[in-house]
Amino acid sequence: MAEKFDHLEEHLEKFVENIRQLGIIVSDFQPSSQAGLNQKLNFIVTGLQDIDKCRQQLHDITVPLEVFEYIDQGRNPQLYTKECLERALAKNEQVKGKIDTMKPPALCFG
Image (cartoon, rainbow, N blue to C red):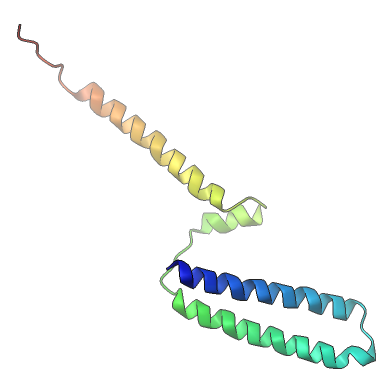
């Protein structure tokens, strides 16, 4: 499973780098750089196709909407997992406490 993500990550990194380079070409565009611009645009189209192929391999993966909210807020999405685990642990301790209070006291025969 991790290999699928590694493959997608590799394609995304290449795509981001091509976009960055495209921005540089466009920001200082000269007619002589048209061939480089065309080549970079072709790389971007190919990169999108590669990303789409990865999408087909990851069709069964679901991401909670809250993760995207974390990203939109500029927060690390790994914090979502950490906070979910902390909430689950707290709820587990709360339920355990309720169970312990409902258990009958142990009888001591001596």
